[in-house]
Amino acid sequence: MSFILMMARNPNVLKRAQVDIDKVVGVERLPTMEDRTSLPYIDCILKEVFRDERLANRINPAVPLSLPHRSRKEDIYRDKVIPAGSMIVPNVWGSFLARQMMKDERYFPSPEMFSPERHLQKIETQTRNGGNDFNTRSFEADDPSSLAFGICPGRFFADASIWLAIANILAVFDILPPIDPDTGKETMPPAEYSFGFTR
Image (cartoon, rainbow, N blue to C red):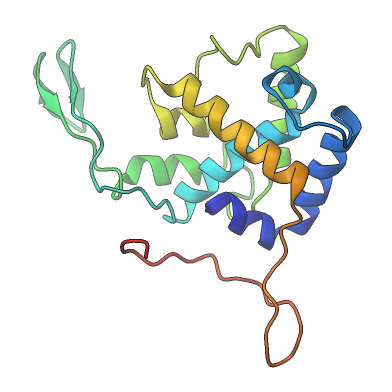
């Protein structure tokens, strides 16, 4: 849902991505994983959606806590000792560290802006150097995907699935802001969520 909202709020990003897809894929088929290295801007959108969700505390996970983890060795976090073998249950909704990292201007200049371009140079460099093998690549500390997936064994499957969904939605649909029934004009949707179950 965050991706749809960000595309409705950023039509210039949507159009640039659609132009890229049309150049690489054409109109006779949908994007596949084989097209991924030729569509770096789609990866930029994916990373920025992850970053922006956490930046504005708009991430909408289904549950407040992540899956339990176990510390392999003794560690220290904020002057607290975590013994080896301890169970750790991350607080996904209240992850102060994730929100702070996504606002760190050393990594993300103008962090309040939705700007997929901020990731483009790094992705293009990785691709040129042969380091963008999406089945085996590692997620770096300043990569928003690392906060979304962590060291989960399914992170590559999740990353590929979300990338395919984004690329295919962009290939097929124009995402526009809603029309105000009273004025007949587009109205920018607020970047807000409400919590609750889907009806």
